[in-house]
Length: 216
Image (tube, rainbow, N blue to C red; front, side, top):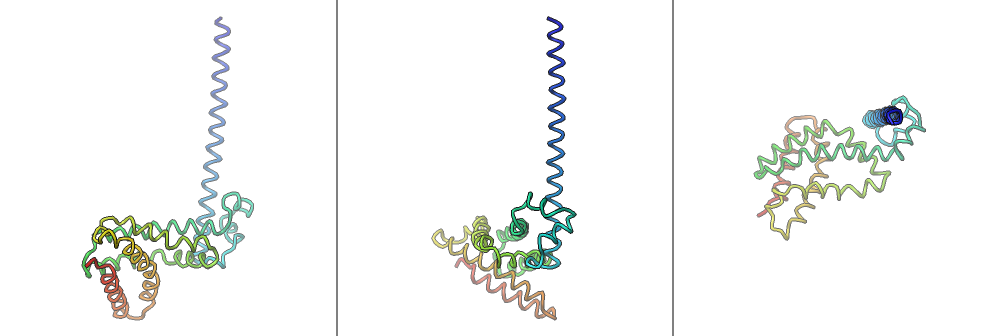
């Protein structure tokens, strides 16, 4: 009886070792996959910022990432899938700034909010340019532009509560259009030669936003 129990104990310990070994190998594979995925994504973002979306090829990406096209397609279906990742990064940045509209009410509030938005845009605009370029060649990305922005504006519950319930959907659409337009406004303001022109552009757009979003 004792011999049988020892054999069972030995077998159980052996099985545990095999299980731990298999788990360790699996964890290493998962970590390697994660690191490769991150390396490819980082290479793509760097090249999109430098050369634009359309001028960047999968071969360019794998060369910078130090991997192969075969490995690339194990992780991503296409270059467009990397554009979707960039879109999520941009969405998070825009959402972080847009949620601050919850505390905005006066024209001066909007003007100050614009300063923060432009600062965010300056950090992200190279990726933003690459994303817009990607939408020219990818219909799925293009069709998601307005629905994604509408989802963002719908989350501004305090801000939207200022409008009568019958008007909220239109107000959400109006704000979504303003946010999408703001990308070009930021580009225009950043391209001016003088501070006075820069301020005048943002002052005028603040006035447009204030009038468009007035709940009166």
